[in-house]
Length: 95
Ligand SMILES: [Zn+2]
Picture (cartoon, protein in one colour):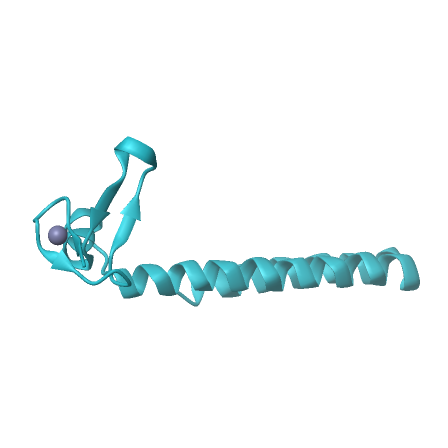
């Protein structure tokens, strides 16, 4: 069991959120996290996961774009760029 640096509540190790390093290390419970940031931790984790997915999707499109550009010519490359931008916009709006 760990103790929250904010409210002193005992929390489970897997629920604890650690911020900072070394002597500045603070352990924060999900409740205090929500109070401090205005988002609950699950939403936060979801957004983080979502951002990761966006990066993967955009990277995938970029690779496809380069491939299309090399294999099919500039027009397809341009299409790839448009598609990449669309994917990026769509995934950042999907939150
Ligand atoms: Zn707390």
